Length: 85
Image 1: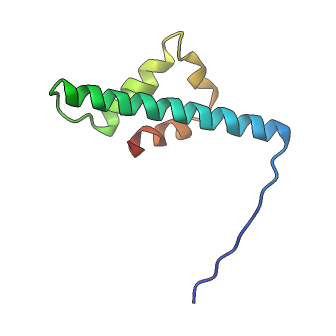
Image 2 (image 1 turned 30 degrees about the horizontal axis):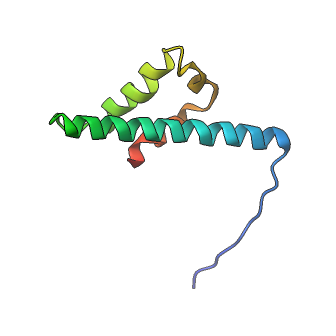
C-alpha cells in the first residue's frame, strides 16, 4: 500500500521573492542551454555534454555584465536547469 500526503506551503513575501528569482534564473539558464544545443546541431557540431553546457551557460555567463545577476541565486538551481534540455 502506498501513502500519499499533500502539503500546501505559504511562503512569506521574502521567500516568494527568493523563489521567483530562483525560478526566473533557472528559466533563463534552461533557455540559454536549449539555444546552445540547437545552434550546435544546426552547425553540425557534436552534442554538447552537460558539463560543457554548464560551463558555457552558467560559469562563463556569470562573468559577463549581462548575466552577472545569475550569481545571486543558489548554484544548485542553475546546475539542474540545463541538464533538462
